[in-house]
Length: 179
Picture 1: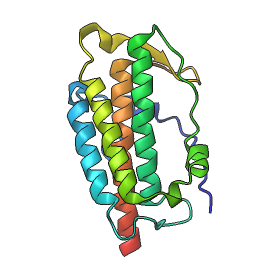
Picture 2: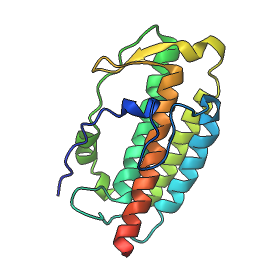
Picture 3: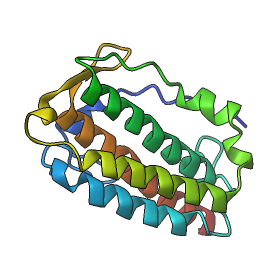
Picture 4: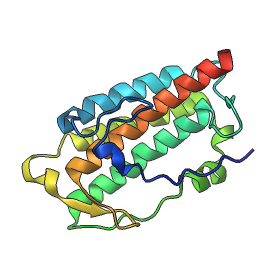
């Protein structure tokens, strides 16, 4: 059954703590991103080894496997976008439809162990690139296709929320499945 697309504008996490996962984008220390990305990937390895990895907790929530594929692709996408911001002045990011990608790439049919490895590799590459950002580079800009402007600083804090939030989603889903 297809998931209803998420059309929320999540940029509010830059100013307000997320009431679901507790992430506080306004106070998140951008320098922590490389270590936090790698730690998040390690948590995904555990989540993707769960026996219920392919099970959706309900009709409108992705399975852990689908979330893991999404996070892997988010790591890849943000590596690309970070590169654009570091290499070009004020680039506009190409649009990415996460829901279309989930269907087209058959997230629900992928191998969880392979996804865990690919997610870890993508996280390591992104963490390494974030570790190179310094001084005035934190203020370089980039623009989402809907016109939302980011600096590398706000882009980092916005991005880190996504994989953190999805760990929370999966933990809640496993709890529902067990209940």
